[in-house]
Image (cartoon, rainbow, N blue to C red):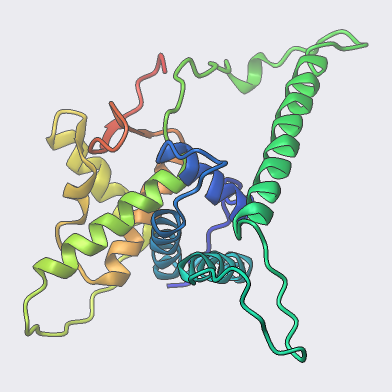
Amino acid sequence: MSYKVKLEAFEGPLDLLLHLINRLEIDIYDIPMAELTAQYIEHLHAMRVLQLDELSEYLVLAATLIEIKSKMLLPVHEGEEFDDEIDFEMEDDPRDELVARLIEYRKYKEAAISLKESADERSDHFTKSPEDLTEFGEVVPSGIEENLNVFDLIGAFQKMLDRNRLKAPMTANITKMEISIGEKMDAIMAILERGGGKCDFYALFDEGDTPALVVTFLSLLELMKRRDIIVVQQGNFDELTVAFRREDE
């Protein structure tokens, strides 16, 4: 399978950390490192299965999280004398540097959003008369506010892999099956047709080996990119639903 995907939502490992902190409703000044590290590594497992490029910087931050978690597990002995040849730099809290990086990154991210909004507003002003673009068709703006991002979908994908791993039989017959992204997209649209225009996210991954599951996931992303479908979630941590995108959305 030579289908490669580059997603703008993957802005970097700090973006993933901020996403998890917001998703888990964690206080950024009092981060539970064990929980955050576990969630971060779960997302990396899903990204590795999807064979996404540029994972090295995510792995570097994963090592940093594990290091901070390890430091917090070490006992602190006040007044303990160390060998003069070993230079220990004791920090009040091993998380301080990470928190500072996250706060600084969040400031730049919010500033970037503000600048983009200013640029979008400025782009509405022209110094020339508008041209006739009717031949290109009418552009209908989307009125729906998306409540999910790619990190949410990758988390759901990892959850699905865990479910399938528990249901996997002890023995299996290996058979080779090849299916293209386009064929899988048609199959997903057919499933939605039979289901009245919507279906459960995990129902699309009921069968198939890992390559087949990856093809299904990439097909979903492509259909969302083409604005043929949407993936919605009613509440935090609720099940995901895949549905046709209506013309008014």
